[in-house]
Image (cartoon, rainbow, N blue to C red):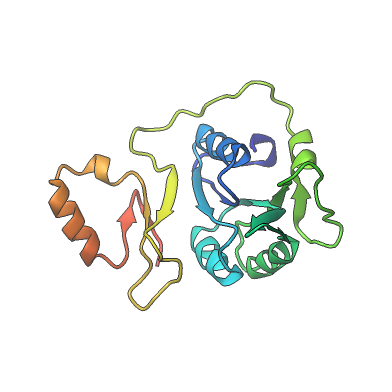
Length: 191
């Protein structure tokens, strides 16, 4: 990711299963001081785009396929829709297609998509170097259960650094979260 220009404060997202590849992206992003966010492959394109257009990631790592109820699903059409939906997001550069199975799907008909193997070839570092970050620097953007879409009341997106900065009792936190429409944490407000 460093070879592709990802720097401290950049956002990187995944649309992927819980896998070793997803964990590697998370570790790579956080090692660079970036912010990580994720969506499941079983979300509809509009739900994924609702999150991605709020987060404004530089890169999106996405599985090229999924297995639902014993059926293999090709996710390349969803990749195409996501690229189209991200065109107005200036920070967005590309989708990195992660092969879900041994053989990667062809990306020849997809714009702004690169295969994971090609993406990794451009990097030349053998050792993982960690960027120094402050204790309270954000690293993770998460969504409360069932909330993806911006609403009249703002989105309930938060960065996972808030509680460490606040010494209010847990019950006060729960009451506070129930009343908030938009959370502004670590200088990032997403509405």
